[in-house]
Amino acid sequence: MSKTMRQKTRGRRRSKNSQANPSISAEDYLERMAELIEAKGFARAVDLAAALDISQPSVTAMAQRLAREGYVVYEKYRRLQLTESGQDLAAKIRRRHATLQCFLSLLGVDQQTQEDDIEGWEHCLSADTLERLGRLTDFIRARPALLAELQANMTQPAVPPATTTS
Image (cartoon, rainbow, N blue to C red; front, side, top):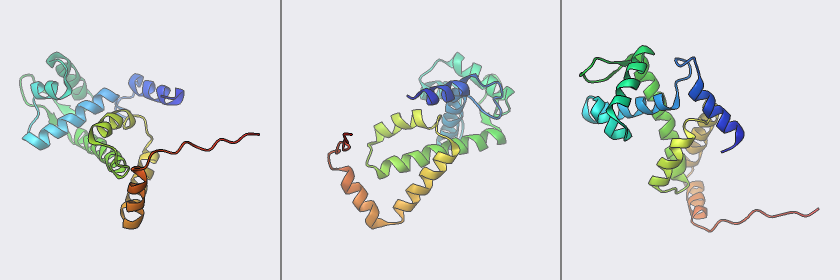
């Protein structure tokens, strides 16, 4: 990871203005909550703990924090609910994830590697870069011949870059 990327990621973790810039872990919680609600119709702390492979007390602490920040409705021993603000942010996070997934799929990256890579990328790429990756993905998908050529090229062994001597 480059120094700039590390600084950007650390800055996200330390941000005091969480409404404008939620932490990486807050985004992960919101993303999983939205997935659970979509799949089951609700999200409980126990389900979120299992999905994120963390303890229930950690989920409770984050749910309380997300409630203070206006993203979640939290009541002890009740299901977690996303507020309108929480739903909007979760949708944005999920779109970002889907954009990266589509892009990596075009390159022929396997599902597990995609998930591993996306977890790191989705929190440090700028909105502009993500938007451009989305446009590039759409551009390639709209051109079947180009897509076929790209995918055929992705199955070939990588060619090291040419070196120049001065």
